[in-house]
Structures are given as C-alpha cells and as structure tokens.
Length: 633
Image 1: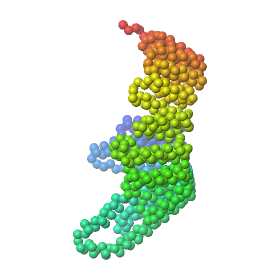
Image 2: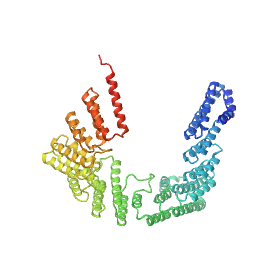
Image 3: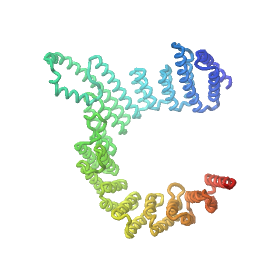
C-alpha cells in the first residue's frame, strides 16, 4: 500500500515544481499540500474506503484548484503579463476526475455520486463527458433521470439533436413506464421544432413561433382594427397587393411546419398512452403542453385527449376535479390560472362537479367540490382586500351554494366526519352561532356520536354560546357543558380525546366542584386503560393544572392519587420528578427526598430503562457537588 501511495505522490512532482517555479505556492505550502494528499491517498488505499473519504479528497482538491487560480491571477497582475498555461493548470482537474472515477467504480450503485461526477465534467467542459455518460447508462439503464440527463446534455451543450433523440428513444425502450421520460421527450421535440421555426423566421422564410403568446395576438388584433392609423402613404396600400402572393406562400410553409409538429406530438402521445394507460398525470401534462403551443389542429387534439381521459378516468374523482378547475382557466390570459374567477367560469365548473356527482356520488367527490368552492371564496376576498366571507354578491352566492352542497352530501349519505366539521365551521365563520349549535347537536346525537373532532367542535360552540352574553356562565350552563363532556369522555379512549380533556380542564379550572368531577372521571379511565407510555399524559396535565391553581401541596396530593393506580406510566413519574427537582433547586431538601422516592418507585417498574437510570445518576452527582461546595459567607 505504501509503495502505491508513494508512486502516486511521485507523479505529482512536475505539477508541484511548476507551482513553486511560478510563485503560486511557497515551499512550505507545497509541503503541506503533499502531507494532505498523502493522508487522503492512504485513506483511499484502505481495505474498505468510505464514500466520504473520496468526497473529502475531491472537496480538498477543488478548493486547492480554486486557490491556485486566484494566486495565478495575482502573480500575473504583479508581473503585468499574461502567464501561459502549463502542467499545473490541468493537473488539478485531471486529479479530481481520477478520484471521481475511482469513487464511482467503488460505489457503482450510488446514483448521486454519478451525477456529481457528471456535473463536474459539465461545469469544466471536460472531454470525458461522453465516456462517463456511457458508463452511467451501462450501470443504471433503469433510472429514467440518467437518460434525461444524457439527452439534455447532447441537446443543450453538444447541440446534437439527433443523438439526443436517439438517447430518449433508447431510454423509452428500457423504461417504457416512465412518465418523466415521455414528458421530457415531447418537450425536447417541441423545443427542437421551435428552434427550427426561429431559424426560418430569422432567414425571413416564416413568421411567429410555436409558443402561444396572447399578447402578440392582442397586438395583431389591435393593429388590424386600427390599420388606418399606420397607412400614411398611398404607396403602402399598393405594395400590399404585391406582397399578398409571398404571404400566401409563407402561410403554406407555416401550416406544413405546424402539421409536422402536431404529427410528432400525436405520435408521442399515442405511444405514451399505450405504454402507461392508467397514468392520469401523464395526460394532464400532455394537455398543458398542448395548450402552450401554437400548432395547426391543436384544438382537435385537445378534444381527443379530453375524450380519452373521460373514457379512461371517469371513475376517478381526481379527473372530475381537474376538469372542473380547467373551466376556470382563461385561455386569453397570460397567467397560468386566473386568480379572479368570473361567474360564467364558476358556473361551468359547478356544472362539471354536478355531473361528476351523478357518475361518482362519493365522499371524496364532495370533499373536492367543497374545497373548490371554498378556494374560490377565499381567493376572491383576498384579491379584493376585504374581510373573509363578506357580503359581496358573488361571495354570498358562492356561500349559499356551498351550504347546499353540504346538505346534498348529507342527503346522499356521503357525509363524513371531516365534511360535517367543515359544515359546522362554516356557520361559525359566518357568525350564525345558533345554526352551528343546532347542526353540531344533530350530528353528535346521530351518525357521528363517537366522532371526537365533531364533539370538540360542538363543545367549543356550546362554550361560545353560554359566554356570548355573560362572561361568567350560570350553574345550569356549566352543568349542561359538563354533561356534554362527560358523555363523550367516558366513551372514548384518553389518547383520542386529548383536545377534549385539555379544553375541559381549562374551562373548569376555576370551578372546583366540576374540576373534581373531571378528576374522578380521569381516575376511572386511567384505572381501566392505564397511563400513557408516550404521547399525551392526562395525569401530568391535571397535576400541572393543580400546581398552577392551588400550589405544591395540592399537586403532591394529586400526583399521589394517580401514582397509586396500577399502571401510572413512565411520563407521569418523570413529570413528578421534574416538579420536585425544580423546587429542590431552591434548597428545599424535602423536595429532593420526594424526588429520590419517585426515582426508586419508578425503577421498581421500569428497571430496564437506561435513560431513567442515567437521569437518577446525574441528579445524585449534582446533589453531591452542591453539598460539597463550601457555604457562602
């Protein structure tokens, strides 16, 4: 191993001599460079070198080469002459490429390492690029990104469209089900056609581009409508007739060019659909690409794609949602999607959703429908800089329709807990508290009697209702809310009702009678289910409430009640220990004794918990250090 390392270092002699001779590095700096390289070379010659060893060596060489270039510029500036290139100008890049080659041969399956290698070759415009691309394709033919990268390099940097097309077609033969490959292939072909079109325009043989630009269309229409403003000379009127023949010939060539582009698009689309018939996102991307280009017959092809999508995906809610949102896109707008949906567009989208509910009456479809309407309301209010759910005519119409959709979902049996919560929340946002209260009561007493989120919403509505007129509710109001909470808290597990328990403890924290009843309910539930080992710990939450309200003595009495249960849980022990240790920090020895008792009690059950033993040990060490210190004078 030492002989190989020494041989590789001896090969660097000419480069290092050149750097010293030119004054780029001093002899001491060169000695340090040799020392670092020897260290890296020994790492690479280990029986099992790590990937990080290669990357660290490469990073060092990159920084060294960057420093060399800066020093060379500085030396040339001082000498006031341009320095010719020599062996040291190429040795750094060659060494980095050599290390990359060793790394990828060692870790052939690491695709990220291959792409780093390729990016370095591309940035330095090194001639090894084609060889590396051939290697990575040989080792990773099933990775679509490799084919896309290789084709992009041939197309953009090597300017070889034929080679790029051949690579894409080879990739599609190996990976026919890759959506990205099909999409990038069609983008490449259309980009190539657009470049040819631009060349013809530059030569005066054609006009326009394959890219749709509504601004150019608007400008042309305005010029046609106001053509008299540009006809100040009579000779220009006569010259138009002479150029008509040339324009017709140019138009024919343009039509032939657009037909060729459409033929390519149709061929690729047919192949993609045949290879991946069940991929909905592929069809939508083809449709969006088609919308952005100007080709003869593109409208007919759009209709064909829409027809195929309806045939193949009419049972998918995603298709109907996409189709409805497509109606909100303004084809004359320069933006991708219109932020302000006009009523006519909204009506078309609503008709699509209504048709979808006939074919596919499901909760998912209703959820997409309501989300669309809510997005429209929120976006419209944002564009007008007004308060959400204002009384504008369009917003009121959308809100009333949204409420009808929720009712329709309930009538068709497609209402879920999430949709029910949205329905109640909408009434709350509109300020219609009475209707929200009645609706929540109806849901909780009916189909969703065990839905925790809906109960949480119902209890919050009831709390708002009783505190709406008077900040301090009456005993009857408190009793009604407590009965609601007791009804659900005794039915569901503690882990599912975290929000309900916290809401109840906070609401009744200043009402001792009801708070004690909640504690009794929690004791029964914890005795039945046991304490939590992770996540929400109800007993700890109650102890913390008692500590804030009544002080440490009441908190101790409370946690002793919980620790007397069969399985109080490790989080409960840790919370009580932390409570006692916080008080022991202010020189309360009783708290320290209580903390030790809690540690001993916890370790009788959790004697295999390493963290608990470590915490106990660290506490004892701290106590020993504190009492070993001399008393302050």
